[in-house]
Amino acid sequence: MEKLYHIGFGREELGQNPPQIAFLSGDPGRAKRIADDYFGSATVLSEHRGLNSYLGFLGDTPVLSATSGMGAPSLSIIVNELVQVGIKTIIRIGTCGSIQPHVPAGSVVISSAALARQGAANDIAPMDYPAVADPFLTVALAQTASSLAIDHHVGITASVDTFYEGQGRVGSANPHLLRSQQGLLQEFQHLNILNFEMESGTLFKMAGVYGFKAACLCGVIAQRTEDERVILTQKDDAVKNAIEIAVKTVEKLGALA
Image 1 (cartoon, one colour):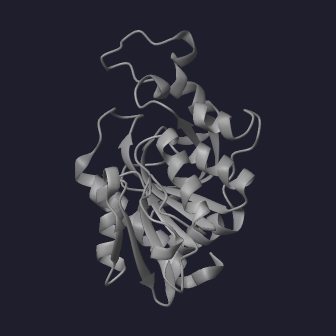
Image 2 (cartoon, one colour):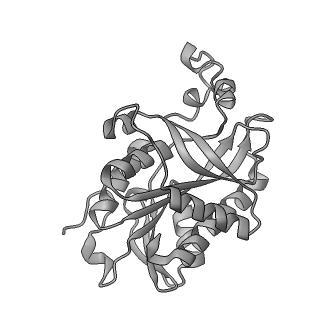
């Protein structure tokens, strides 16, 4: 197989023991952080267009740490190409904003399913096609979080295409939200949705259609029931906790993840 255009590598670059598991981060810096901190000696597969990918091992298990870019359209390209090179399990490690008072900044949300308000998701499957995480992988992540005594919350995520309008933010360059976006935060709170992010709905639909396992966990970096701002003092701990949960789960499950 030739190198795939967006991820910048093909199956030949993955060696004789190719990985079947990938950690997927929107931020290329986070993908590199995972590789540097947990893979020991990581191989740089590509840093093409900021879509960085690294190959390493957790124990005897080969693993990729890859970058999806921001948002579902970019993620859909990367996930498609990762599946083409043989990836069978994808764990998204991201960040999010909480919309529930009991989900504080610094904690981790493990998504059991997503309300997918995304054009990319609708290109994969109809609007009413369920966007659900792999239940066994989701439970494994929650069990790991409990064993590490990390504050975590399992539930439904709102996955949208835009950071401002699509999440009902009013304090941006556009103060005139469409009627369908006005009061969105309060409406989703009443539906017991835990958080907003921008990728999991498309990832989960792709998993259902393509036939791979998917999970998503996000460090909470904003508590929108209190303040719209990202809480930078707690961001690093939240992201570190999400990474730790994902890594320890794969170490425990290995190729079975």
